[in-house]
Length: 380
Image (cartoon, rainbow, N blue to C red; front, top):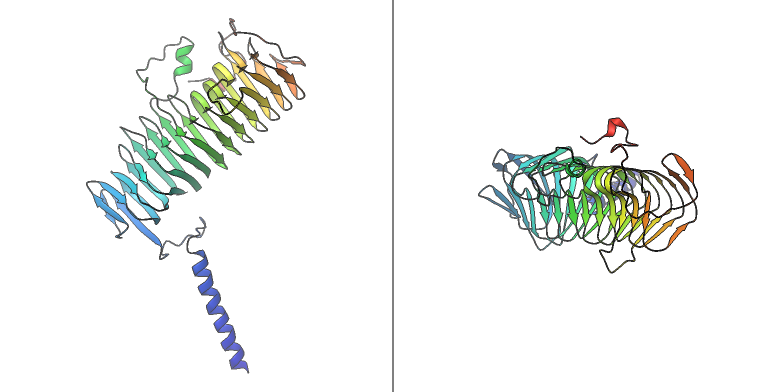
């Protein structure tokens, strides 16, 4: 009887192990990853040499082309380009990967591409965007991605989802537009568009993102949804959406010509600190899908504006303030063209609480250019 029971237990254990392996071979726990999985292709770069072989990719002329769908684990140092040209989904694992190339990652074709970040990864380039994708892109993981690009950082012709990871992006010569606009001597010949992250639609959560860009830091031709995260942004527009910009939560430290810009801006929560030289929050008609509106329902928002024709909040349509704390330091706190409603929340204008929303067209004034700015945070 004992032998029968032991035999049954061994069979059950064996079947359980088989089920576990089959059921989990595509799931990767960052803390417990085994890259010996049968469906994972390991590629190790040593200078310009590639260790590893597979029918799924081809290496020639300092270019690695991934031709088949699947999971590719990449590590090491490479002076060359990675091209993805596949009819299927491609899952890339960056594990302490460094690439120096004019266009490090170029997705020509794929159903969808996922990049999981492990360790510290670096992409640097001289001629084009560090990551350019015609397919939808997902960035996730617990690691870091550093991008140093003389042009754009990440350009996605479809949609991008960022769910986790630490992203540090430097494009062009960095943010100098604010100082130039204010008449300071910050000479630069950098006039081309060099954005940090650009896509059709952008969804971000649980990420830590730092961007210093010559042009917009985060730019969507459609909509942007930010659910959570930590953001340190310097750019022409820190966050720009042609359609809807929805901020559910997060911590934002912004230095820009314009802090937030979209057709419809909706802020539900978050800690948002904006230092701007044009408009702190601006809604303009960039899309026919939405009415031009700024809607603030919650959050802790501080806006410090430079001198001149500047507005803390500028809506070319409607303005609704329903909650949260709004602290604005400038000569022209509000400028709106449509309907205005103040239904709740705390308004502090130049240090004084108020219950009224004034309407001032143009913020011309001669205030100190850094009035309200913490001296430790002034733009450099």
